[in-house]
Length: 379
Ligand SMILES: *Cc1c(COP(=O)(O)O)cnc(C)c1O
Image 1 (cartoon, rainbow, N blue to C red):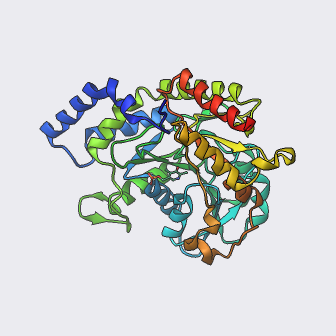
Image 2: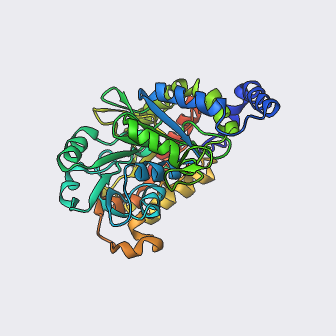
């Protein structure tokens, strides 16, 4: 059996006629600049998240950058976030001229350890970016309370959390603003690049709308220094076709996660834990090799990689999201962190493995993967 990490061809097959029809219509009409599909997608995605505003942008990194710019975060400012995330979270902070200040993650949920945020707030702190990692939201209520006390913006990195819920409310509606990515492998993915900023704050929406189009409201009149950060019409049309299926796809992912969880309960790995407050959309299904002293064999990095190699030989693709924490990356050395700065982040980076996860995955494949993992434990 061959099981990929994601299988986009399986998703495309039943959508083919719908998507090709939409693209053909655009090419016949040639309304390519922030046209009817971008406008409609913005409304549909805002309704999906339960927010008044959604602004289509070129990608998720740009969405983060535009949200920060719209909140007035720039040179000399500090933004608190995590090191255990995709590099774009920290990159966007630096791109606007600010400095990322990292904290460790919660060992259960792998999202920001809210208890560590307070001690990192200084007079330069302007914003906090919680990352809803692997499809599960961060614990937002205590974070928002802290942010309100200190007058800080909260910008959700929701790039892995389209449709995820926190106490019933969708990601994208939890902070002051949120950034989504439509990178092809995300729960909602384009066939190129795409992103979205959502917000409940009218002024942020207005500023992002201008900033994504060179700071202008009216052609050739520039009130702000912005950028070219627009979403293109063809990607918007693809995303509209797919958005109709997102709830069903997320429900399927949750079912797959439940089956994985049951089958891996007594195995040499730790399945992900869904927090009481959360409804995860399992963008990734990330297990950890158990850090259990009796199973010393399985605690070293070599054996995490040993399990990956074992699965690979059985035709099972896996990933590591992410193998090197941002604070230990060469490009981020100047921030002044070192090995040991964030013990949970560093320990988990050596233990995590992402298993195949996509809506079209079959129960049979999940059983095959789980059985291979249990067999590895017996060897
Ligand atoms: C994908 C992702 C991004 C960046 O999105 P792009 O569309 O690739 O620019 C940012 N943050 C996180 C957590 C992501 O997973």
